Amino acid sequence: MKKTALLYVVLIAAFLAYVVQHVYTNSESERSFRSEELRGELGENYVMVTFLSGIEYWKSCLKGFEDAAEALNVSIEYRGATQYDAREQITVLEQIIAKKPAGIAISALDPTSLTGVIDKAVDAGIPVVLFDSGAPGSKAYSFLGTDNYAAGEAAADRMADLLGGKGKVAVVTLPSQQNHDERTQGFREAVAQSYPGMRVVAVEDDKGDAMVAKDLTEKLLDKYPDLAGVFVTEAAGGKGAGEAAGELEREEKLRVIAFDTDKDTLDMIREGSISATIAQGTWNMGYWSLQYLFHLHHDLTIPSPAASGDVSPLPVGVDTGISVVTPENVDDYYAK
Image (cartoon, rainbow, N blue to C red; front, side, top):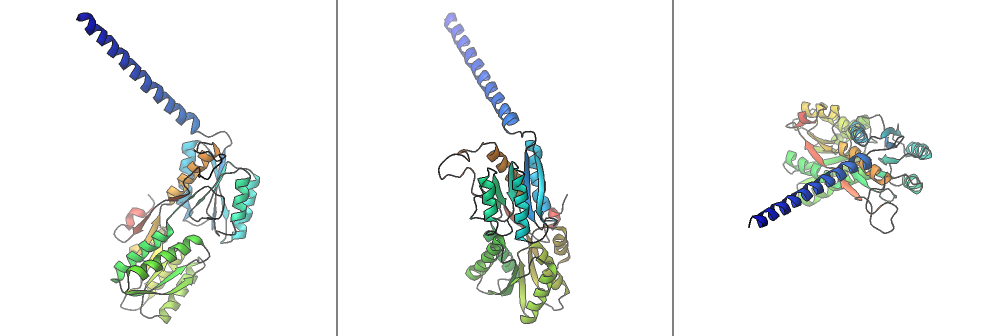
């Protein structure tokens, strides 16, 4: 009996030793994967490309890109068109392709005119992902950004709350850009389908300029003296419409819903000239864009980019999320 008990003890001890060794080996393997596979190589450079490259909006995207670069031990570069000019952005991309970077993350100013140069980069073996503003006809591997149609719907819901579901409203936008078109469509269709007491009376192009947006809002108020609200699909125009609303001399307040969270917009929400704004997951866009490019460059995706077949090596579209900023939560959105 004692010999049997001793045998059980020996067997149990051997089993426990095996388990400990197995766990240790797996742990070492995981550590090795993290330290070797997810670390960049000397001279490995990734490029973020935008347009209107000096505006505040891109700061959070770039911060996410920088944080991912630090985690992966790679270098990055920030480039972009200085103006709202697709030809300038194409020129910038051509210059970047010539340097053969490890990957490119781009926010496409125009979904059509940028397709050729994006495809040129991919054909040259340079991984490309899109963020914020896409080019769905291109060979880019993935798009990371806001579900802009849903963002437009969220703006319509907030506008309906502010107006009690009744009143004339307008949209001020950039109709040549896909993300703005989707925001406008989401807003208009949500109003038409869910709020019969509201009516979209105009959709205007502010060309991404605050002064143009202010002038348009004033002209809309002249044409529709009972205009109750304006949804602006981009940050500069939101400030212009907010200024017009703040200067309006009438008993009924003009409700302005803007887009994005630059400091001027947040200040105007505090003051009351802008009623709300739609905040995007901009840090997510930058951080995960670089992670995706890194995985493509190092052939860590399954299936790999070089594999045949129709399955994409990455999620084709990633919703990086939105939230609605109001006077009640605006303080949470200031840069810390």
